Amino acid sequence: MMKINNNRGFALTLGLIFLFLVVSFMAVYILAVANGISESNRIANEKRAYYVADAGLADAYQRIVNAGTTNFSTSTCSNSNEPSTCTIPFIPSSTTDNGFYAVNTVNGSYKISLVYSGSPRTNYVITSQGTYGNVSETLQLKLIGAAISRYAYWSQTEISPEYGQLWWISGQLTTGPVQTNGTFNIFGNPVFDGAVSEAGSSPNYYYGTGTNPASTTTSDPGYIFPDGLTNKAPAITLPASTTLADFSTAASNGGLTLTGASTIIFNSNGTLTVTGNVINSSCSKTTVYNKTTINAPSSGVIYVQSTKTISACKSTAADGNATIQGTVNGQLTVAADQNVYISGNVIYQDEPPRPGIATGGDPNSPDMIGMVAGENVTVEEAAAPAKLEIDGVLMAIQGSFDVDNPQINPDPITGGGDGAVMSQFGSMINYASGCTGYVNGAGDLTSGWNQVQSYDTRLASLAPPGFPVLVNSLGQGVYVKQNISECFNGTCG
Image (cartoon, rainbow, N blue to C red; front, side, top):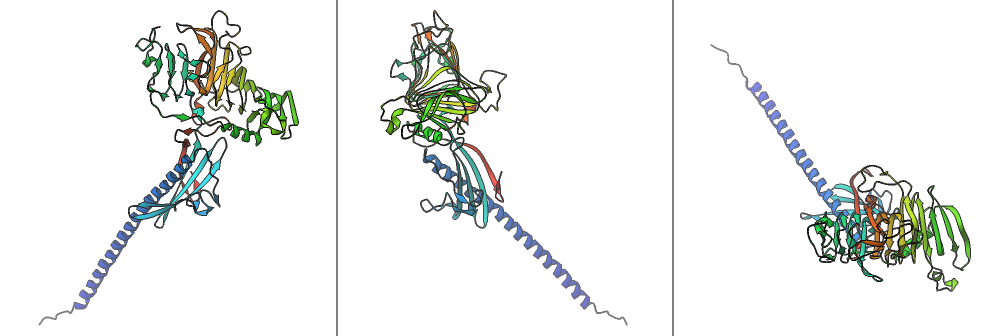
């Protein structure tokens, strides 16, 4: 007979071990799947939180743009890079919406902090913290207000109140972006080397158009506008006359305010030689400058006001005129409530690169000058040289850039103005086009200066001290987006 072994206990043990392994494997698998789903959801929520934060930036940006030249205050925060620490954030607030943004069918939320600075001109740092579920993402956008100096040339109209229609003539060269809210008047074949736009439907061509730039009886639009011409362009608004008040305010905060006709000579070492008076609200002279050399004011703004603006002086004198010339070392703006007179060269000590010149110039040049007049910026024919150079931003708020005696040949040029050249490097902003010379019926310059304008490309993002934010035809501020970055642990890159 054979003995039969009982293996049922062993089989049961083996089965339990196998079942345990299967259950363990399933548990690990389910946990991995759950973690994967959780991670997937977290990543998806991070993206959603990112989009919510981006929506917050867009909201804040639009509010700033819609405010025109009205500035917003800096938010009250422990760390402006973390809007959640703000006791007074920019958005939401009791007078604005609640900072909600819909993502699919679920609402995310954002909170905004804002940091405002007026140096070198209006700029903001916007930080937006977007939250979706329990995930938050933070983004930061840096803005700086565009200035009207971003144009090489700008005018409201090409018709002078004094001379009527003024013409761009053969031999004139303008480099850089150009805009007029009027219509260009073309005599011969001047050249605009850059983007050009006008509000008019087409330029007025004195001779009509053709395709031969060498012709003396037609104008060749393709030669005149090599980068094209945009007609019926939206108007760009010149800063209002109240802009002068902004310069006055800037001068009262670390600047210099002179009353009555004044002279400022820029010295190559950064100092100024000044002739003029500082007069207080009681109409008493507190400082008299008589060819006195002084350091440039800390804010960089010099404002020349008329005597009539001080009520205690009981004067009707509209004598807020500044006469300037010299070598600019540093950043300055000279603003006058009446006129700015240019009596000689205005040049930079450290010259930046110039368009069309392959070599030379310091791309990091800190030198920049603004010349702002409530009325006209005028070249004094009797004082200025025949080879005249004017660097900087010229702005005539209610008038023109012009020459006081354009019918006269600058000394020592005689027998025709073909040798007199005015090189203007920077930006020319005037309400109405001004007269700088006379031409005969053939389009030849007979007196005054031929103009050659070139754009200072630094002005695409920079402007002299005190310059206001550019405003479009809708009254909206125009801003340049400088940088956008993500923030981590209260630090933004």
